[in-house]
Amino acid sequence: MIRQQLLMPSPEDLADFLNRHTRSRDCLVQVAGLAEVTYQGRAASTADVGTYLVVVKQDGSLQIHHPTGIKPMNWQPKTDSITARVDEDVCMLLASRRSPEELVQVVFLEPQMALALELAQAGGFVLRGSEAEMQQTLAEHPELIEPGLRVLNRELMVESGGIDLYARDAQGRYVVVELKRGRATQHAVSQLARYVRSVEGKLPAKAVVRGILAAPSITTPARLELENRGLEFREVSALPQATAAAGGPVAQPSLFD
Image (cartoon, rainbow, N blue to C red; front, side, top):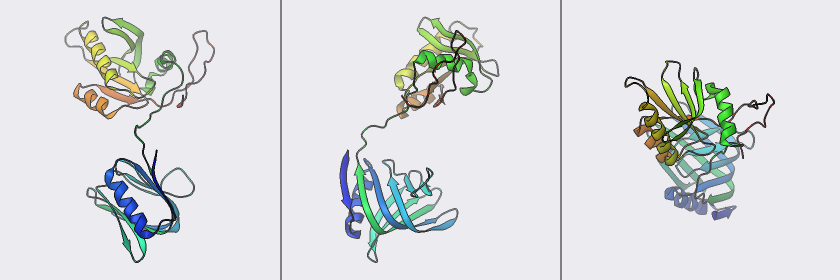
């Protein structure tokens, strides 16, 4: 997990650390300490000298955090270039983008810690409860998937399996919804595509059938396959309280398992 850690690094050691680990794009880098931050782009700004946490993720995105609050004071999504150098006895980090043209400069005046972490596999949210409970809740609140959606059937059986939610949208088109409690994969996309083909085979030739995959998140290969197949993704990361069949409340599914 920890690839390298430096405490009270010198400017030279910190610049070498940043260049080595940001160029590899295979670890998460954090630097904490007294720093000055300057931004140039659509506007120009300079943050007061203060204690900040600088985070560079594996995709090259940059975040700079205050000691308090959840929102970064500055961020750069997927920078095109990140370099570090020593200038006037301090380490300077430069993160730039070409479109739009932006530059963030961080001057580390008194770095306290530098940490490189190996995060081999990205995690994802898993909704608490069973898929049956998720299905029940979304059947009662289909607007969480899409406004105007009206559920016609749950667990509709076709030759390729059971469709979680069979619905019609605001334009009257048929909609097949496949639900996943965790991160959706290519297997879920293939499953949804089979269900859509099964429904298309039972409807008139002019009927339009949409396919929607609803889940907390989706892998990049799955999203690409979804788009290639003309299917859709809807993020469902939190659910309201469902109503039990007997009329009483059931435990509310939440974001974490």
